[in-house]
Amino acid sequence: MLVQNLIECGCDNVNLSRNAYNCLETASKDLHLLLLDPSCFLFDHEPISENGRMQLLYRKHKLYGRENEVSLITDAFCRVSSGKSEALFIGGFSGVGKSELVNSLNAQVYICEGYVITHKFDQMSKQRPVLEVVSMFNDLCLLIKEKRTPQYLLAIYEELIEVFDTDFSILARLLPNIDAVSPQPNNTIHKIDSENEIDLQIIYSTLRRFMGVVSSKSHPVMIFFDDLQWCHDSALTLIENIFFDINRSGCVLFIGGYRSNQAGEDDIILSLIGRLSSSGVPTTNLSLEGLDQQDLNTMMSDAMCIFPRVCEPLSAIVYQKTKGNPFFVIEFLKSIVDGSLLEYSFEQKIWVWDEYGISSMDVTGNVLYFLSSTISGLPETAQLALKVTACFGGKINQSVVGYLSTNPRYSDIQSGLDHAVVEGFVIKVGDSDFKFVHNKIRDVAYSLIPDSEKNQYHYNIGMSLYPMAKESNTDTIIFFITDQINHGIEDSLVQGSKLRLDVAGLNEMAGVRARDRSDHVTARSYFNIASLLLPTDHWKSHYEQSQRLF
Image (cartoon, rainbow, N blue to C red; front, side, top):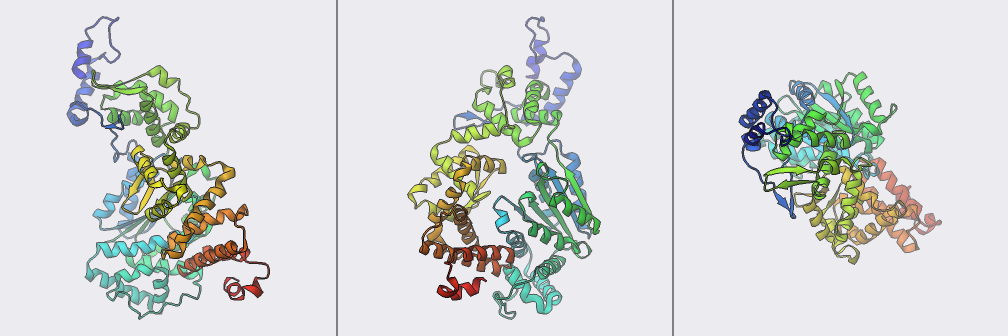
C-alpha cells in the first residue's frame, strides 16, 4: 500500500486517491510502522473465513489505551508483593474492559509464584449471598495443592494447625478442600459438627486467619470479584470484614469490578470503598472509560492490517456510534461486516467500506439492538439454548445440558449451544461449562423472554431438572434446580399438595446443603420457602419436618 500511495502522489487532483501521501512526514511514519510491525503492515493478510464471512484479525490479548491503568494496578501488586494488602475497585460501563485490564496482571502474579482466584457475580448471585464468596476461598486450597511441593504443603498445614488450634474443625467445615493441603487426607482428627451454625463473625475471623497464613511475600494472592453490583449485601459485608484487618498480616490484592452506571452516591459498593479506606486499608477506586478516538483507531488499524491514517475516516464513525466502548466496537464492526458495509477486497487485498451506509446506521441502545437482532436471527435451537443458559446466569453446566436434552422441550439444546459457540456468543470452558463471552450477551438473550413469561420459563426448566435433584450429590446443581423452581412460587405455579410437599422437601435439602457450607443467610431463605409450601396443619401432619424448618 505504501508504494501504491506514493505512486498516486503523482496523479492530478482529479484522479488523486484519498490515501495518497500529501507530505514526506506521513510516508515516513508509515515506513516506520512497516519496520516496527511487518507481520501486520508489510505482508499481505487474507482474513480468516468463518461461516463464509471474513473476520477481522483482532489482537485479543492487547490492551489499547490502558497504559496508565495497567501501570496503576501493577504498582499496587508490587506493593502487595512487598508485604502489604490493598483493595482496588474498578468502575465502568459494561463492555469497557474491566476484566481484560485485571487479567493483564495474571502473568506477573504467576511469575511471583502467587495465586489468582476470580469470580463473576450475576443476577442469580443474590439468591446465594455468602456461598459464592466462601467457595472461592475453598477453591484456593486446591490451587495451593496444585502449585506447591509436598514439603511446602506440610509447612502450611502445620502453621494452620498452630494458628487455629481447636478452631481447626471450623476451618475444615468452612473450607472442606483444606483437606487437600493435609498430609493425612480425609483425616478424622478434627471432627466436624455440621449441625451447629457458624456465626458470621466466626466466618469473618476464620477466613482472615486463613488468608494470613496462605498469603505471603513469596506467594501473594490476587482476588478478583467482578460485577459486584449483583453481589448481595451480606457478601459485601463478608468481603469487608475479611479485609478489615488482613492488611496487617497477609499479602492480598483484592480487586472488585462493578458497573459504575448502576452505582449512585449512596450505593453499597461506594460505601464499602469508603469504609475500607477509613479503616486503614489502602484503597483505590479507578474509573475506566471508553477508548479515545486515537486508541480506537489504532485498534481498528491492527484488526484490518492497514495504516492508521487510512482507517481514520472509518474509526471516526465507529467512535461516534459506540463512544469507544471496546465490546460495543467489536459488536458494531461485526454487524457491518455481516451487512457487507465493511468487506475484504481480494482484488485490492485490503478492507473497504461504505462510509455513507455506515454513517446512516441507527445504533439505538449502543449496539444492543444489533446483538438482539443478531440473536433473533439465529436458528430456533440456538435461541432456545441461549435463553435457557441466561436463566442460569452467566454459564450452564454440561451435566445440566445433558439432562435437559432428555426432555423433548429441550432436546436440541446441545446442538443449539454448539451453534452459539460457532457464532461467538458462548465459549466452552473445559469439559464442564458453557459460558457467555460477555454479560451483555446474557442480558440480551434473557431479554428475549417476555417479562410476563420469565417466571414460567424458569419454572419449566426447574421442573424438567427436578428428577436430577434427587440423584445429584453436587451442591451447585441442587441450588440451580431449586432456584429455577422457586420462580414458579411467586406466580403460584406450584399446585397440588404432593407437588408442594416435594418442592418443600427440595428447598429443605438445598437449605441443609447451604447450612453445611456455612451460608446461613441462603439456608434460611430456602427453609422459609419450604415452610410456606407446607399445609396449614403442618405442625400436626408434618411435625418432624416443621421442627427442622422452624
